[in-house]
Structure formats: structure tokens, C-alpha cells
Image (tube, rainbow, N blue to C red; front, top):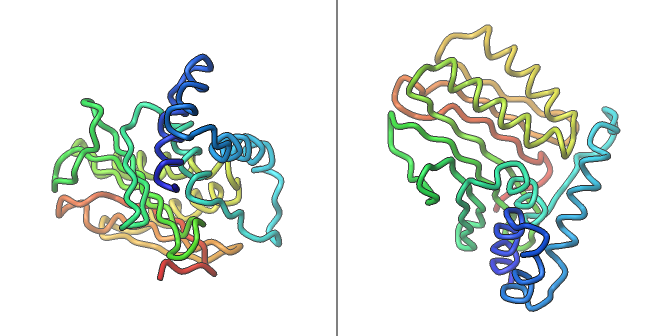
Length: 209
């Protein structure tokens, strides 16, 4: 059922209001969980800037997080694998999920959920821009901040701080940090080998085992 719901999220995020009910009828059998997820995302966007340093991490399930991604990047093709416990979307000009190839243009967002429940464990943004290392870093961290600013502004702010720390290092740079229940890993160490710059944000007290 989760795969069906995620498929509906993929469609609904790109649908007009007139198309929504047909999508629900065809793919959800009038199940309202997707609408609840979309509504929750809208409410979360309103609250995202209200958290202080002592508040716990904001946790979303895989459906809610997929709704966030689809609302931000509705034209990116998407894919869900229950076996891998992963929702993925990639930037593509032919409306198909683009496989990774070293040294090729690549932009991907992956959401993983925990084994045994539907809560998100971590989110990975990866970008390889053949134009330059600097552009790859900028695109990666801009997308990462853009995703989280509508969930928890503290995460976007912390990414910005870590980017500044990363900029003080050389092209083999990587940095990690734990703060307010979130675990951060920013890795720009393998660009010269044809691999993307990555921004990983997960929950410090949730594992993906």
C-alpha cells in the first residue's frame, strides 16, 4: 500500500486541481492518506522557522517527505523501491530516472525510510556538474537547504554553517556534525574522480537497520 500511496504523491504533486479527484479514484481507491500528507507538509512549512535549539528534530514519514520533494521539484521523474526503502528523484530532460555515470551531469535526491516503519531515516542530495567543482558544491548545498527550509529552518542554517567550514578546506573536503537530533555529512572529496558532491541529513537517534 505504501508504494501505491507514494505513486499517488508523485502524480498529485504535478496535478491540477481538476485532475486530483481522478488520480485519487484511479490510484488510491479514495484513500485520504496522501491528502493528509500534503496538508501536513503545508502546515509544516508554516512552522519551519519557529523551532529553537532545544526543540527535538522534526520527523516526517516517507510519504510526507516525498510530498515535500514533489512540491519543490514536480518535473523531476521519481521512483520508489520498497526493497531499498528508498524514494528517488533525478533531474532529467527525458522524464526518466537518470542512472549515475561518472563524470556525467547528475542531480539526485534520495529519501530512505527505516526498516519496520515508514519514518524517514536520512535524505541524500547528490550533484555532479561537469562545468566545475564550485558549481557542483553550490547546486548540492542549495538544493539541500531548499528541501529543509520548509521542514526545519535550523537544518538549512546549519548546512550553511557547514558549507562555510567546508570552503576553508581543499577539494578533498568532507565535514560532519550532530546537532539538535540531526546528523550531517557534507562530502566534496571525490569530485575529481567523477563522483558527485553530496549532502546527507539524517536523524541521529534513528537507524536504517
